[in-house]
Amino acid sequence: MIKLALFAGDGIGVEVATEAVNVLKFLFDLNSIRYEIEEDLVGGASYDEYKKPITEKALKLAKDADAVIFGAVGGYKWESLPIELRPEKALLTLRYDLGLYVNLRPAKVYSELIDASPLKKDIVNGTDMIIIRELTGGIYFGQPRGIFNLGDGQRKGVNTLTYTTKEITRIAKTAFEIAEKRRKKVLSVDKANVLESTELWREVVADTAKNYPDVELSNMYVDNCSMQLIRQPKSFDIILAPNMFGDILSDEASMIAGSIGMLPSASLNGKKGMYEPIHGSAPDIAGQNKANPIAAILSAAMMLRYSFDMGSLAERIENAVTGVIRKGYRTPDIYSDLGIGETKLIGTKEMGAAIIAELKLKG
Ligand code: NAD
Image 1: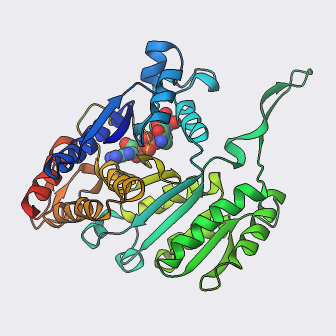
Image 2: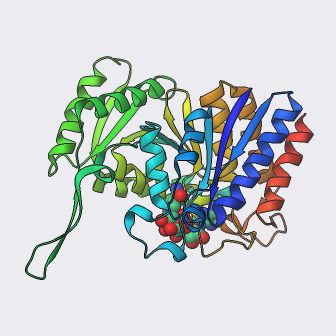
């Protein structure tokens, strides 16, 4: 029996998670896989009901489940709350409390979607990389943090960028193990020229690399990396990055792939995982059936692969996504009117239904 926790969250999180769950239910039923999905509120929805972004009950649900499906949290309504009560706190709490230190963010360009990227076709075509982001350390969690009164009318905002050898070693190992199954290349990103915490990062990654002699390690400063990603995205395979750098670089990589609505993610601690699109709750398009559910649906595929060793089912979802893209179905974010009548503009629900129809077609 597969036990899933579902936290759809706020805004388009709810819309895209619904489509991902529909796809999963379809595949589970088709293959007689027994499952149980229990849902709870997180983010702004939880704050409205319980005055906190995540409750103990929801955290327990996540801890007891085999895997968590997450939509997205946040929205204009909750922006002025103190940081501890903001919807985004739910996400950080889940990542930290479940020990999800590995964040895999694949960014692949579908040749049919090349026109959706603002970059030139010959630059993006063939791009296929995974950003491996450290998820429970670094500046998002380091202490001290806060906004402090200095007593003279001045205030000081403080966040602390820390990394221990243990935190770096375990994420580096993951990157090298994944690289062994791909192009045997790891590019580690840091700012070792000016930040001691990432000077240590560079040193520990190099030490870890000694156990993986088949894998070639290179290093790049994050500022240079953000530039090279646009200049020659095809040259990247595995990018290993500290928490904040990985966060920023993966949003950048999403535009190489055409839209942030295309990029899935897996946050892992061994087989335990939380699966979510990399995008947020997109309040600008929420409730309008405009969100692209593909990132959420591909995140569900990652769940099947990483938490349940169901790689062939994951591939069926990935192939169905490729199939609907080939057939020309597009949500607004990936739509470009080529003037040849080959693309069909559809909404969130229709994209989910088209992917299920494609799965049915392939049996
Ligand atoms: P966002 O990712 O929500 O949206 C950025 C832009 O991309 C918007 O124009 C949006 O319409 C578009 N977009 C995002 N996902 C899309 C999809 N699936 N299909 C089509 N278009 C899509 O980022 P933001 O606007 O900076 O943040 C909005 C809220 O989401 C904030 O409250 C933020 O804190 C929160 N947020 C949450 C998460 C998360 O839950 N993991 C991640 C990032 C931001």
